Length: 397
Image 1 (cartoon, helix red, strand yellow):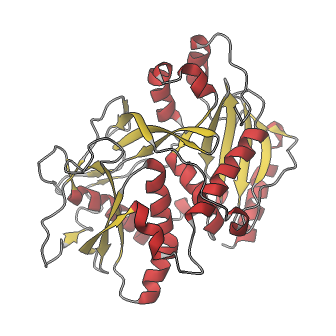
Image 2 (cartoon, one colour; image 1 turned 45 degrees about the vertical axis):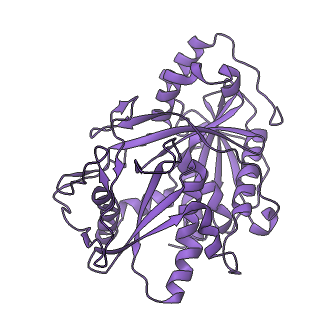
Image 3 (cartoon, helix red, strand yellow; image 1 turned 60 degrees about the horizontal axis):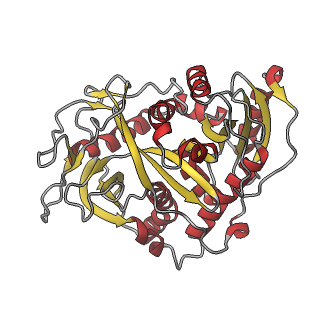
């Protein structure tokens, strides 16, 4: 399906929902990489505020019970030879992707811990709250050529909340996902099972079920330029033998990729896949990505560690490569764009930021369903905690 067809479909969806659509702002945000090639902006070292876990039924727990421990195989000349197809589909319980969770789990954590944040409620009132994955999409936007995105934004008690909306094209792609792609997704989770143990010092047990409902999530704070950030991201495991035991410096990201033998394949890998690995890990402060390279039969033949801070070196001299400064400058500019656009403090009012490759970011305004995403239980609880909402701070505050 080409980009124009995706755009036409998106327009049809918009046309089907005129009831709650409001007059739209006229501003646009360009995404051309050349516009964002200045110096690297300030990005504060991410500091972990806490964590939470999701169990096999996707139920929330305000603890680290789902945290796993990095336990790589012994280093030898034979290679790990992990069978990533083992257990598929009999021992596979995928998460129900029809359930759109939004920010709900992070908001649950905020209700429990928001009052204890350093800086108090005033810090949160000027912050941006979102998932790490949403920020990752912003970082990679200047170089993305295939997949668009939509981010819903609402301001409540001064805080700007950003939550991704599944685009019509992404939904159609998900519902039509071919069997091979479903199996490849399983392989990524299976690799984690081979590399992680449930307790420090124990060995992985790849004989169990792969259940993608289970997740351990870190909650962190940082600052990008003038923007205070509070965000959460799923963490694969912690390394008990890491030089620093202080999270997120002890966390490890696990990835799989197909085995490559030609220079052209490696160049493509560095330009595209490594960009996403870098963005994901850099934001969270994860120092290393450990990749398992699989052969066509689905066996992991080799492991390679990619230090996050060294990933750019693979494309530094590539004219068609990516630049971390461009990624971070665009993200900072988008956050300023969002802060200056979403000025009305109303949890039922949504500004929908939409982007397709080759086009600028556009904005439309909506009220209530289907785009409102801050749940009633959160709004009511926060309103009780703060009888008078603080004024909306300016981005310069």
